[in-house]
Length: 175
Image (cartoon, rainbow, N blue to C red; front, side, top):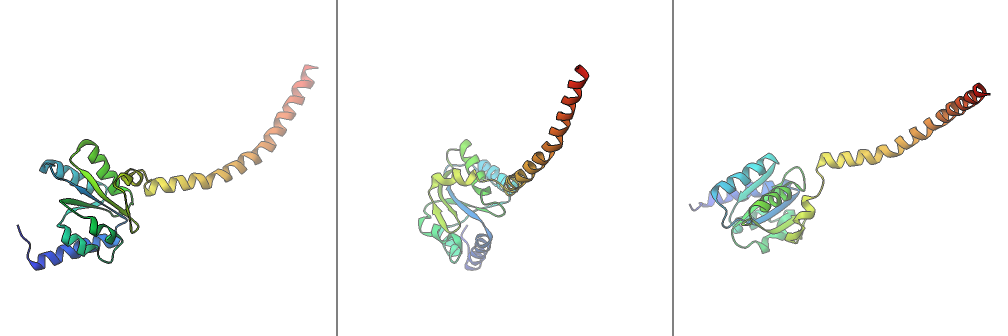
């Protein structure tokens, strides 16, 4: 069904608003996927707070103007599904790459993060990025290590004294 001008403007405005706040974007060719497969992909995307949309490339190019994803515009060819990471830079990459493992008809064509267009094979690097909670956990463990080392070092002094006194006591009891 063809869209009228007002509907096209609404789609462009919606995609532009999402693209302005997104951390990364993935464009994948979905030719050959069934409706049930696309519905399953959309459900997984919703679970991970990934915005997923099939939109005409001309409308997507207009929506990308002035955003970090403007670099994707010239390379958009064919039927593409767009996935935008809303909260976590690697969320869209994780959803698309996990789904593509089971469905070979979903082929990643474009990957963009931070205004840079990456190679489609770089989706694995983006998908392997830690989530926000994982990154905070890693940071906290790095910050905790020096304090833990200091505490164990300070605890070693009285422990060594107690062991020395116990050894002297055992030696006197044996004599």
